[in-house]
Image 1: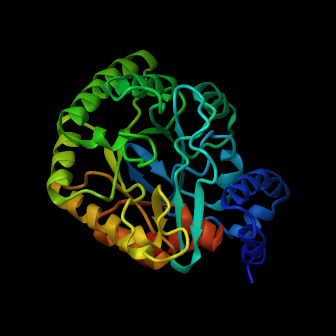
Image 2: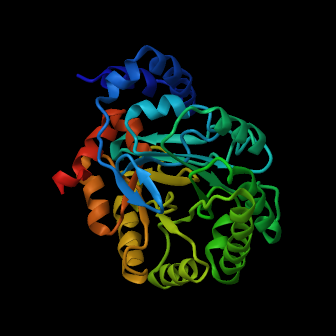
Amino acid sequence: MSLYRLARPLLFALDAEQAHDLTLASIGPMAASGALRLAAGPMVDDPVDLLGLRFANRIGLAAGLDKNAAHVDALSQMGFGFIEVGTVTPRPQSGNPRPRIFRLPQRSALINRLGFNNLGLDAFVANLARTGYRGVLGANIGKNADTPLERATDDYLIGLRRVWPLAAYVTVNVSSPNTSGLRSLQEGEALDGLLAALDTERTQLSRTHRRSVPLLVKIAPDLDDERIAFIAAALVRHSIDGVIATNTTLARDAVKGLPHGEEAGGLSGAPVFEASNRVIRALRAALPPRYPIVGVGGVMSGKDAHAKLAAGADLVQVYTGLIYRGPTLVGECARALASGSR
């Protein structure tokens, strides 16, 4: 029996956010003692070149677990091929009122309405500068909840400028359902305007810092084919380097009637698996060949990770699966996607 299977009943006896905070507080000492690496198992060495970067393997940590980039060194001992931190906003914000995370164990799912709770860019950038991690480290940026939508681009530009010198890649989060109106930035003129501004800014940043940083956009699973096609065209039109599909869903069909199933927020875990795959397939059909897609949503096993690649993803991220399966999930998925296994 794995160490995590022993610990999980204790963690699940706590409020979900308390368990999250306790886990983050514990992984540093566990990493220092070697226990975290022991629990995760050996790292899978399966390098892949994408986005001008070399990933140690195809399995990454999705944004949301380490919002402040405070635990990167410890998390790196879990065998990830890359790590994404954030979402970070320009100014600190507390997020939505508690309780705001709910487990649905019958469906291996979570609902969260955290609302980009984070310590802001100053703390985030300081943590990035301190980390000893030398793997691929992505920074996920968003807007403050009290920033009007018509000024959202300002917040994203601030985030891009601040993380540019330290991040291996930057993800623009326009798909969280927990900041009012944010998903409208995936639509029409709003998306075009945002991407155009980011494209212009990164050209200047590349010259100033003499380094190129790939720019990705994270989108929602709750999109029809027409909107996916529009997003794909916009990504290409504005020379965005890649796309992450997908964020959490607002759909509740899969958890109808379950305790907490009607809580407001984004649903993650097993119920979003097929919706995410549908978006990945649509993107792969709409985008140019070899355009980088990162698949995320409902990966609970190596088989699930392999299905993301079959749908058209190049890399895969996990988060909710870690809560239900623990750190051994990382190695299981990386082995399933290793070059000799496919």
